[in-house]
Structures are given as structure tokens and as C-alpha cells.
Length: 370
Ligand code: PRE
Figure 1 (cartoon, rainbow, N blue to C red):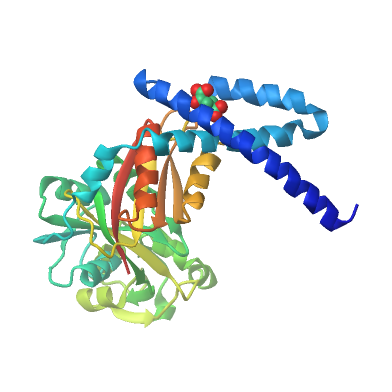
Figure 2 (cartoon, protein in one colour; figure 1 turned 120 degrees about the vertical axis):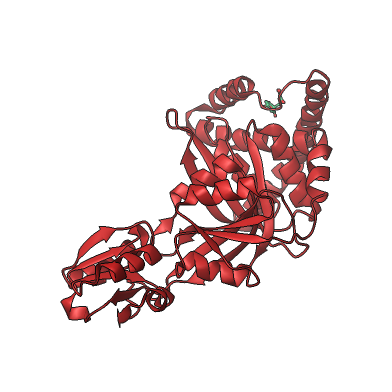
């Protein structure tokens, strides 16, 4: 048989399959109506396993695993169809669409000290406000929790050092609304009172030390972790010892009276940190372009795959996926960002469905990222 002939045969088989798939979907919707009336969950893992075992046996050794893969997908689609059609959570959509489009903050809160990269992020996102500094990340969340007019600035990811896991854990703990995000160019510099050649020890935040690992190794320096780049600069200025330096921003050098003895010492010259702004009260700007969510999924084969597939089916581009341990066994909460706006009907419908299907689902925000 030629390629064209085989393809004709496939087309013919597909023509036969479609009415059967549609018939199966109609049955699935009937099941959903019963489940809705009896308040039963959409997902029935026991029933799915029964079907997967049966079809694998029926398809035989050569095709069993492939046929069960087709069915695994088909049942994920069947669940999506059920929730899109019947379980659409109007309450969730109405709540999100009722959020205001803007908000005026009176305070902006960062972690660290003046001259920290959070300071630059705060100036970029809220230039009209003078930042206040907290000792650690959790204090930023607590300050936002206590004051609705305060917005908190937090680093979430660096292009060299990766995710800032403690911040992801706090996002999931406090569930504040993410209202803005921005990338900040991070140039690390050697800051001291003397010459670069005199330096033997460097103090900085663990991420900054990691970003400058090559420089530290090449110059045989002793690296000491400090809470924050700006606080390290402040400490080094107080020590007044030319053998000790901080790694941080040029602004930190200016603020604490240190000399910039070596510039741009980070391994990767394109070193960027992504910062977010969090608020206790939500707002969604009309031109928002990023959505953040957190959820848990059933501890079942293929469940992450099928959830992520739903985003792909809606044409949504995931820009971040992070998993954080739940604290018992190896179960995780997933945090995701994707490009989009919840005013898009398909996006809102997908989120509404997931909200009603998943046992834990948190909408963290839809905001402008630039
Ligand atoms: C179906 C879909 C979802 C359930 O998780 C199990 C099976 C299926 O498509 O076969 C149907 C259904 O909802 C059910 O049998 O409870």
C-alpha cells in the first residue's frame, strides 16, 4: 500500500471513530448531570483504573500500553467536558470579574535595606512611594497582611540562581494577591574600602554569592553568607577593614560609602531577577498579561499531564511551574504562571472548572508584568 492509500484508510477509520467518540461524550455528560444532582465529584479514579485495565487487556500485549494512553487522555477530556459544561462555577468567575481595576497604595515594603535590588524593583513599580525595609521576607508578608494600603516587593526568581523557594512558600502560606511583576537587571559588584587585590573575604546574600561563584573561585576568596546584599555592604562599611568586601549594587556602595573595586563580577552578564508586588486586597488592571495560580492534584498517574494539557488546549503559554512540598510524604503544591487575561472567556472558564474540580486551588492574581 502506498503512503496516500494508508492515509486514506486512516481517514476512513477516523470517520468511523468520531460518532463513537461523540456518543461516549454524550454519555459522559449524562453521568455529569447525575453527579451534579447527587453532589458527587467529577473525578472517579477507581472507575478510570477499571477502564484502563480493561482496554489494555482487550488491546493485547502489542498495543495495550498505547490504547490505555489514548483512554487516559480521553477520560481527562471527558472530565474537562463535564466541568466545562455543567460544573462551571459562576460564583468564582463573578468574584474575579468584580475585582477593582486599580488601587492606590500608601506604603511599599521591601526586604533588606536601602540599595538592595528590591529597592530598585520598588522604584520601578511604585516610583511615587519611598520604600520601607523589613528584616526578612516573612515580615514583608506580615506587613502587607496588617495594612491594606501596603504593597510588598519580593524577588521570586533569578536567571542564574533559580527560584527563591522561601518566597514561593510564603506566597502559598499568605495567599496575598500578586498585583504587578517586573524583571530587574542585577549587576553584582565588589564593594570595599580598599583595593580589589586586598580583599580576602566577601559577604553577601547566598544568591549573590552563587551568581559570582567564578569570580570568588578565581580570586581565592572566602564567601560568607549574609541576609541581604545591602546589609552586607552596611556591615562591611562598619568593619572598616580593606580585606573584607561586600557583593552588591553600585547604589549600595554609594549609600554606605564603599568603593566599587570590581564591576559586574557575576558569572552571567545577563543576570536578571524577577520581582512581584503583593497586596492583601486584589485588583486586576485591564491590560494584565500574567496569571498566577496554585493547586494540588490527585496523586495519580498522569494527573499533572492532564491538567497542563488543559492549558495547552486553551492556547495558554505557561511561563513558570514550581512545585513545593506539602510537608507530608512526597506530595506537592504546584504554582504556575501563564500569559493571559482572565477577561478572556476560555481562560476564565478553564479556571472556573479547575476551581470546582481540584480540592485545593488558589487564584493568586492577574497582573501587568513589564
Ligand atoms: C468517566 C469520566 C470521569 C471519571 O473520572 C470516570 C470516568 C469516563 O470518561 O469514563 C465517566 C464518569 O464520569 C464516571 O464514570 O464517573
